[in-house]
Length: 481
Image 1 (cartoon, rainbow, N blue to C red):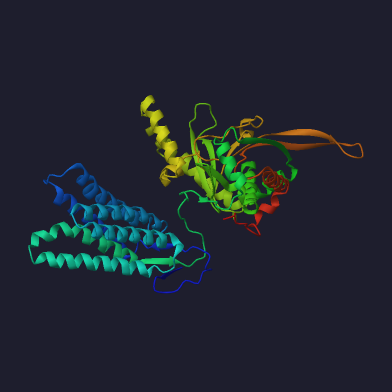
Image 2 (image 1 turned 45 degrees about the vertical axis):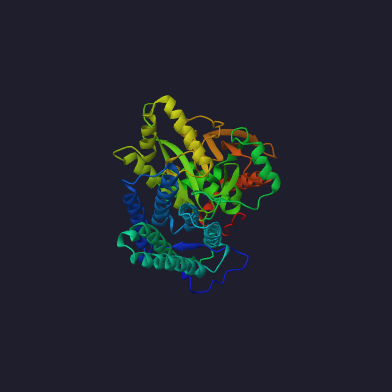
């Protein structure tokens, strides 16, 4: 639910608001068109005119880049990350400062203009980032700036119509800003919306204990910060549960689905295990649980592997997970061409080795600063909540799998094949029970050891009594701010 700028917002006063502009709004697309036209006209007017390097970079390249980045932000991120328009607005303020300095105006007038441009950019960034609920003021600011530009243009018309042409790009970009602000609204759904510091795949946690913040810089890599846990679960109840599910029509239901459903239920109660580290900052995926797994098209040594990634929610039941997983597996195995991950890997493999090392470095750097595009994050099996591997299907015990320094995957879980164990009861009788061993490798920086231990004990209880996974979680706990 949203509300226009002219209406009040009744959220608590200590909470930031979130602005957005609907991509269905005609005003947004008119603004995109005006920004594109501004860039084109500026380039067309500059062609064939000699200029020094400073003029080219500050009065042509800079405003063109700012206009195009503003237009792209509106076209692709206006509904979720409108605050990013602050960057092109700041760049345009720099451009106007350079422009007023180039016309040879008086020192006092130039200084006043610089102050006005800096104040405009500061107020815009402060407001559109959610720190002010009075965005109507931005409408007035853009209208005033556009009015001044049109007045100057009217004065130029008296001299020569050709003199108006250089002013048109500035008029168009100010018009675009006015259209954008007029079409901007405030979210009223009381949900969290991305802001500065967040990533496309996670929300940054800003209230962590200071000790944890410092520790992330002392232990900058994931592999040295990993902890390993091995445990065993008795599966008598689990096997009964699996047989019952298969009788209900879930013919492919197995241990993998039980493990994954139990892990999803753990996230519902202990959301910190759905965090990840990137760039020494801790993020949470909130209700997006990204499950990764490698699957083989056929159980042969020659069959290729493909990466599977599922987006699950804390409220999902075992049956929900079964259906989603089977649909994705069927899609991958039944695809006539390669999966998205396979296509991306094949494309990267074509890059020569030396160049490829540089490409990987660039990808790591972009990932560090949260700049990887969403489509790469989606196909990457190194970015997710948890990676599962079934050694039981291979007839061996679970491996202790390492974590990856590339990406942000914080948990790797493996379980092995079933085996029997003879145990002596209190009355001296011997009972044979069936067990499954599993290993969990975790990034200890996402939460403390006590929290992890509590979550893993809860996981084991769910595995021992999987019938609890048939109903949605009674309460879903939200991670800290």
